[in-house]
Length: 153
Image (cartoon, rainbow, N blue to C red; front, side, top):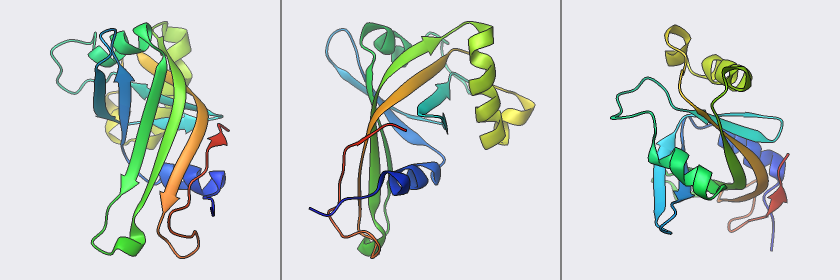
């Protein structure tokens, strides 16, 4: 089966402003939320920011603490189905709460999102070590139906 290159998967992921983060709770129930993110050296970062929430101790944080296995999905839909694509990242996560460990991820997020420049994320950061990439695209340069599991980079 033809494969999507890891470099193309990374490029497609970087082209979207949000991804969907899937975690699993202690009860085995999946939990899916859209998140802003930044990728650097094989790690994807997302943070608890200032947008209205009832608490900063979010379910995704408890889920990561209970089971570090996570999946992220980026996709593009278009009525022209030759432009469809998706990229899935599988990895293992950890919650960073120490201010020193959050400095670099917060700087990466602030550089990527203008909205964070006036008010950088102050909450915990989830650091996801990328274990594999899987993707599919219908574009002419990558045959339809392509997928590959590629070690994180």
